[in-house]
Length: 110
Length: 113
Image (tube, rainbow over all chains, first blue to last red; front, side):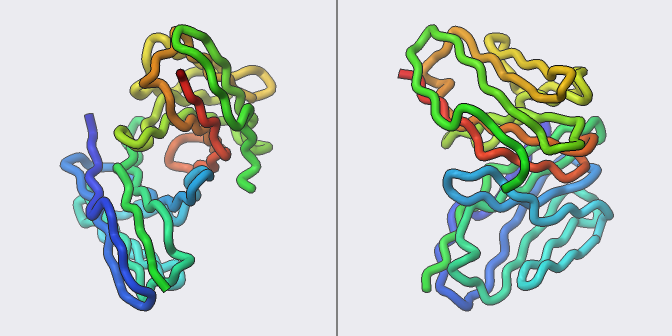
């Protein structure tokens, strides 16, 4: 079983602060995806990283894929209340299955 | 709006019963995925269909089954329901395999009493 461990599970910060969410595994993934989910809705894909060491930026969000393709991080700069939600990482295995981490619940207070 | 539709939105039923959840993928998407999301287990992959054929299987119980029809819509059948089956069930679709972007539907909230 390929497990993805996300940390922290909960994050409560003030508007303007920076934060980092980590996603770690002992397994290698062909690619890794980050999703954001709001209450009552399905997850929405933010980014897919494919190459070891890859860094992708999406406005204030920076995603990094580890060199060995076993871990990833999501860094948010100057968090805003609109960033509040559940952030999920998901690893794609070589045989096409998507394994999700437990998620990080982020709350950004105004 | 992801373009993926799921019905019903809410379902309340009793233990031992059987229910069917329905999913219509985005236009043009050939793959459909089913996921179960509960507070203690997180988002768990159940099963994937590609163009009518089962492609990958996850943690799907034997009491659960799914199929994808020629028009590409999919149904997830849950039988002999137990209290622990209460969860959000999501359907997602993608153009092809899991490494393509998956678009999630709004989910069906199943409550077993």
